[in-house]
Image (cartoon, rainbow, N blue to C red):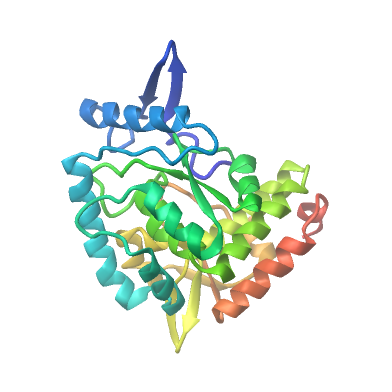
Amino acid sequence: MDRVAKSYAPLIEERDGKTTVTLSEDHPGFGDRRYIEHRERIAAAALHARTGDPVPYIMYSEEDDATWQLVTTSLSKLHKQYAAAEYLAHFDALNLPSDRAPQLRDVSDTIGELTGFKMTPAAGIVGTTTFYGELANRTFNATQYIRHPSQPRFSPEPDMIHEIIGHGAHLANERWARMYELVGKAVLRLSNPKAVQLVSRVFWFSMECGVVEEKGELKVWGASLLTSAGEMAQFRNVDIRELDLAGMAKQGYEPDAYQPVLYKARSLGHFEDFLEDFLTMIDDDTPDAI
């Protein structure tokens, strides 16, 4: 299982020195040749980046900057109402611009100074074991493209808005950077694909789509919810359940759609304890035991 549905994920290929990005017909950028060519340049920069080199500088388009400004303005208003207080405190540390798309290298440097995590460029969707496994070395594979301007309120694939505004604030917080590292270490010691899939599913329902009780109200904690204005505005209306490992293991989810089921913690400490207990105890036999 990768971070987004395979049917939606763009196909990225490199032949004879040329990088091509093929979008599925249901992708909002399908048929937009200028957007696709821009995505191809960004993908090529990631594919040609060498380990240890600075994150490639991207020349963002006017549309990218406009989309970033539109989305961040919308999210800022929703975050004040719905985001967990601890998220807001560490998001401010990123000091992101509001009028233009930031450079991933700058965000990575900021996070590195705070927790030692770094963001490395990814051309597109990274395989599950690779993505999670590299978290053990405090390395987060992040995309550098911006979602298509026709669909700013929700991105079915993880664009840079999702990576930075969602996960970036988590990684700037040592408490949660440690949880990401534990995810990576858990995956690296597993050989059973079903066990790796279980880690991915728990990550989805906690770090991507988790909600938490705060002063009697439900607040958003997960990176996916925090970067989807459309979904955040209505998350309290879905089926919200208590943290439950067995339930998460059986609950299906759609990475390219709003979630019909969410799991809540009584506090961020409850989330932390739940994740740490799970990540330290999981082994190859766990999926068959729950």
